[in-house]
Image 1 (cartoon, rainbow, N blue to C red):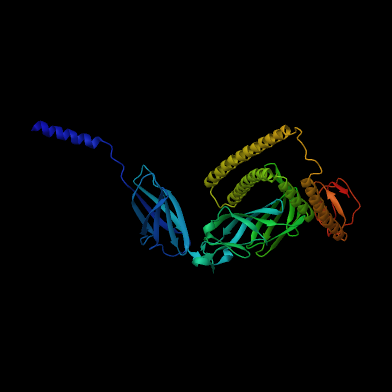
Image 2: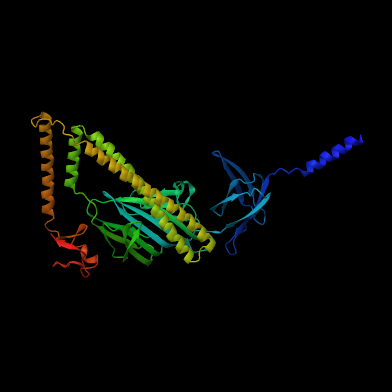
Length: 481
């Protein structure tokens, strides 16, 4: 009996020496109202959300008199999201329960709400303009600041009981809208003049990005953008293969982003409602006569059975072009993010440690993106080389259908008809243009004389021309035609 008792004591001792299994963790939190003299934070519903395998597990509790809350039976090492609404503003916080701790704490700042839009202003506003065939791609990036100590929840109601918090007035005729940084499809509501956002704006800086296209049907286009908020700094960047000037902005030195040069127009301290006008000339425009000739040529190709190969080739080129545009959009967005981050750091809006961390992340993303763009360019070059090689192989003479073939006669008549129609349009175009001012050709594109006097630049050749502008005429590299 004594031996059995001793054996039991030894076994119990060994059990105490075994490591204890890690139990469920506890998360305690505290709401802190950062608005001086702000309202109470008791009785606020707080939801803890865990996403796993496409499903969401939720726990809900209510804050106590001091704004505290507690969640138990959590899995150590798991990532959760805390969601709550306070005075109409939404707050979402990501939190990870440390695996080595059974209890962890978190503080969540909240603010009183306001519907006063005068607290909003734009610290920096970038517009990046890229010309394309028949349209301009415009990317906008804004750093919007709530200068107060309350969360702005909007004034004007929109659909489904939501309020418009930020509004953006876009140029007429916009298409292909894309919502980038700081915007979500679910929270954006299109309007006749642009769009509005319904997410609240908390004190501090919020970065916004979006893109769109505008069509043009001539060699020049006037971009008019109405500013919705007081703006400290605005920068317009236009690819330098076209001309750009603005009566409301100052012309700066040409800037370069990854082997691409942009004309730079800038302005400071602009009031809400200011119309920013940018006149863009030398756009890659094809007149109506050329469009008709192109359509006629495509029809001829369809009749002789070459349309399929042309369509396949165009699809491949469009796919590469679309991917390059997407990468360029991401690149421009990262450049703007870095610029906004630097501005926020210089303004003392972000602490040095957080600034270095965020800048390192953005820089890493930028390096990876540049590598992807380089790989795409190499693939594009290889594809062009293969196409060129295939073209060389196809130089073997092939039998030619006799000229008197009925099909060729029909095609010839159709081609002559297309050329005749194109010639009529061309003659009419020349007749209508007799009253226009004389033209000069500026490398690499040509512009009307009425545009040139306000461009400026280094003089390398002087021609006797009539200055119909309001400023002295200075022209770079011209020839008179």
